[in-house]
Image 1 (cartoon, rainbow, N blue to C red):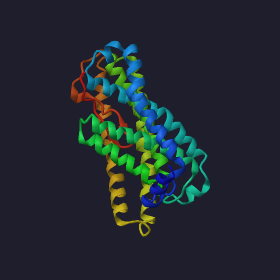
Image 2: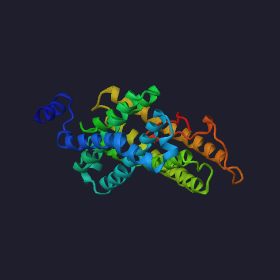
Image 3: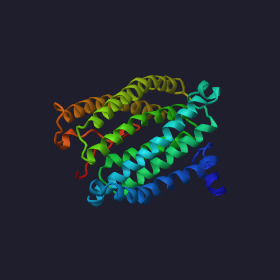
Image 4: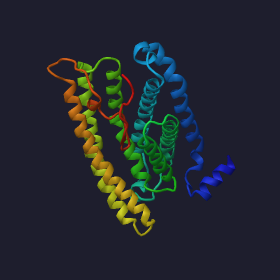
Length: 283
């Protein structure tokens, strides 16, 4: 453990990571255990038709959504707590500031994104899924340099909308497409996505670009270019996904009657810190 701590601190330059390595390990193992054991065990018993009767790819996709939902329920409240109780020094230096509480919530996120990356590799469906996991894992790992950890914690609040996206997906898979329950969930989905990702996300995006510009002489040019382009692209995608969600939800409700959805009608689920995964499994 001491050797690994020295490696990540001195060789990788992640000077703030060593105290949180155990949290990172346990988070990764916890999400892996839910994916491989907990989700399959209970899903097969509680949803014999929607889960147990499907092929391997569909069952794995179901378990992925279970893990995603657990991650949301853990990381969003923890991130909000960290923001509300962060030290003043962190806000004074948004580029390089640090707060010990941040280390724990980011370690949980890193554990989740490592699991997400490995699952995308072993159950390869789309290269975009792999890229999403790698990028998110790299970004949250880099926060331990420390670098822009202030914004990393705030971006975890975007996962709020993922909770309703996952609910929407489960309702589709359990034969409740177009129901009143899905309609109510749809309002919460659109509301949370709009206020958390579009409004709050846009505000954070402006702050982030301003901070990045102010620190441009203290960081490599590549950091400035990559983070700027990534930020602009992700905000643009948030608007695009918001439009797609509205269009897809409208197709689900036609005079109160349930309708048969095509692949083109699927809402991109789930959206994790800027990258969507669409349902490509059999229904």
